[in-house]
Amino acid sequence: MTTPTRFILIDDNEADNVFHEIMIRRAGFDGELLIYEDASEALAFLQKDSLITPTCIFLDINMPLMDGFEFARNAAHLLSGKTTVRLMMLTSSDAPQDRKIASEMPLIQDFITKPLTVQKVRDLLMGD
Image (cartoon, rainbow, N blue to C red):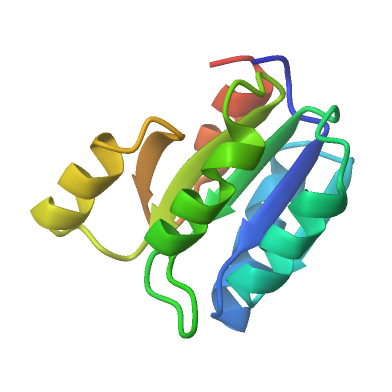
């Protein structure tokens, strides 16, 4: 994937979103950053988006209404084969079963345990 010019945070925890936005900005990212506290709203956005902007999506697992795994299953047809979009779990869960489920979903490219760090964002921006 090319260097992301857009980040999307999908997490129902407002404090985590604020913290992760700070980490992304401290890493030197000054591009578009979208935050969704409701996974279904993020899915609706992706359905309307052209998906040509290099985008990194950080997705929480445990959310009401639509959890991260359900989001990934629903987004699979939209994002499959899109080399411009990288989807990563960003979660407080370190449960082996969550890691296993994520590893079995081709759309999910990484599993990061919160909190997001400046170094992880820099690695993404450097093309890691």
